[in-house]
Each structure stands twice: as structure tokens, then as C-alpha cells.
Image 1 (cartoon, helix red, strand yellow):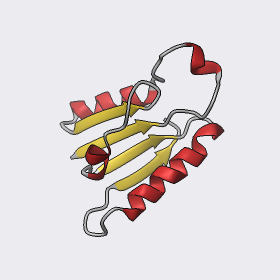
Image 2: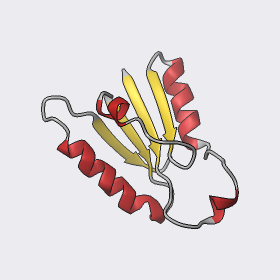
Image 3: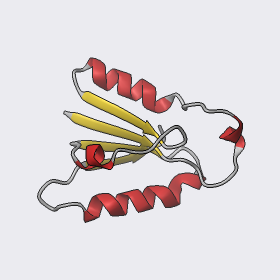
Length: 97
């Protein structure tokens, strides 16, 4: 299964602005899924751009919702996923990762 995990960048200045660090949830989940044989990619927006072709071609898309500041961006991304072709929609999973 093709799985893409996204950690949206928080808007503006925040406590993590001083360091370029990935939170541990998505790498842990991604490693477990990879070890089960899945094709997994993780995108951390504060470190680089999201490959939307990859996202739209995924079977499952997971987004980190850690922190209230990410809710507006997650809603935007969900809107983009919903607008994607009805014939091939990836499943969306929201949760604190």
C-alpha cells in the first residue's frame, strides 16, 4: 500500500521555530508501516515542500494534528484531497501523531 504522512508547518512563530526538528510520531508510525511492507513517505513542511503528486497518488494519507495551530492547514489539505478525482481518492486519517 502507498502511504503518505504529512506534518503541516505551524503558521508563524512558535516554540519549534528555533530548531529544524521532526516530531517523533510520524517517523515512528512510518517505520512500523514500512517494516510491514508498505511504501511510506513522510513530508515535514517546516523542512521541505510536500510532493502533492505523491499525496494524490497515495492509498492512505495521514496528517499530524498535534497542536491546535495546525487545524486550519489540515482543513485546507482535506479540501484539496476532497477536490481530487472521485475515481481515485486516497483515504484520509486525522489523529494526533
